[in-house]
Image 1 (cartoon, rainbow, N blue to C red):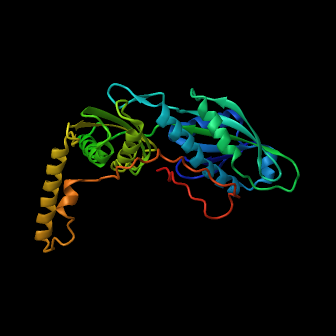
Image 2 (spheres, one colour):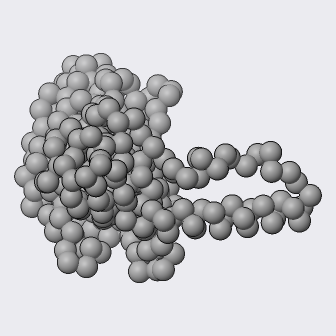
Amino acid sequence: MLTLLLAGLDGCAARTKNQGSGTGPLTKMGTDRYLQKAIRSSNEGVILLPSEKAQRVYELPRLNEIAHALREPAAACFLHRAIDTMEPVEDERAFTKVPEGQVKIRTRIAPSGEVVSTEVLESGFADEHMPECVSKAIEQQSFPQNKGGLSHYVDIVYWVSLGLQSDVHTEAYREQLRREQVAAGLRGRPCLQGRAAPGHYQIDGLNLVDRYGNTMVNRVDAPALADEVRTCLVQALRDLQLAPQEDAFVRPVVSRVEVDVGGDGLVTVKDEQWLHLLELEERALRAVRRAAAGQSEASEPPQDELDAPGSVDPAPVRDPEPIPRRPRVDPATGGLKIDLGPRR
């Protein structure tokens, strides 16, 4: 008998049996079909396949909690690997070396709830790092204790792929990205002042952005610049912000900032005058709307804030901190929060 516990598809976890005329639990063929349907329907997720004996020991609500809890550390494996390996192709809308795929891992659980061992049964990942990283995440997970004194087995399936990027072909996306990368260049200007020799520099960035438009992890490629300058620029480009896209999972964003460092040390960012004029125009439109509504300008930010959007401390900053692993806790206890959000 097989029971499926799913997290990540439609934001729910469920026990699933045959959808036919009640002829019994899922067969092996039925399970495989269900798994393939789940993988096609969602960019990422976790499915638990407890053995028949394990089903008698573990309560399904607790296994549901575990399925959800594993999504975050497994997604962290994908994010940190992807930011190291992904490379954009020529049109910057497709990527190579994306660590996508799926894996089935057999997990042996001690009576104490501790994971004793993991074994990769099947893997569709071309990247060998992913099954190993997901296995380590599973090993950090605690299961409920059982009083039978026996170890039990649960097969865990994880899959992941890049989310939808339906807006990258739109004019609104291109303008927003242009605006954000110029603003990032202005924030990163202190990183270059006094640290870069006179000349023209091209700074290429890759950000992995969540469905709300926030950067989760990013990198900067600028081989002509010193390590401390690149490290500082990582922080400047990390604040890049896109419009939300609720049906997305991870959106890769390729940015390019061009700067010129003069002989006097003055740093000029390409298109900074365009951004300055755009912000002045937006400010004027806000003033017209306030005047029409009879409001004052007391809440308007000072002009000097508009002249230099987003600055950063010129001191070098550290690379992005790794996403912390969850502590070993009973998943039935309160306080567990999943940052990935529900599927819609």
